[in-house]
Amino acid sequence: MISIADRLQRAMREGNLTMADLARWFGRPHPTVRGWTNGTKVGAAALDHAWIIAMLVKLEKLIRSKKELPMPRLSPKQRIAYLDTVRKRSIGGK
Image (cartoon, rainbow, N blue to C red; front, side):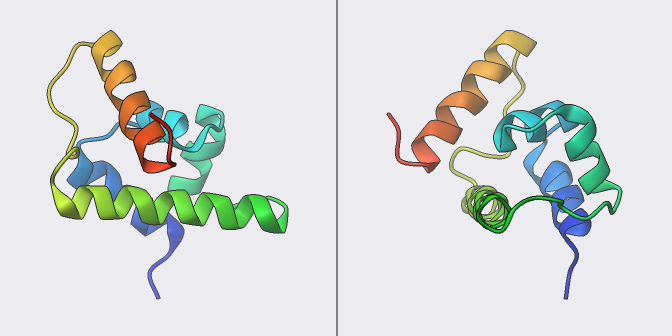
């Protein structure tokens, strides 16, 4: 079974995502997500853990579909806005 760290690293590589992008995607602090990518276990309550895994699955599906990800080449400000839009769409927002 592939680890969460491996899945996150693959998402970064195949989705053209930075650590900051992942932190925004998961709504978690940068050091927390960096720890996850380095093998630290996701330390969260059961529902929070399930939400993190669900968001990872959504991210992986978006990358595989190649519709909105990999992340296009954008300025930092545009990158933030683009990822926020993709994230909101993926969780049912507008």
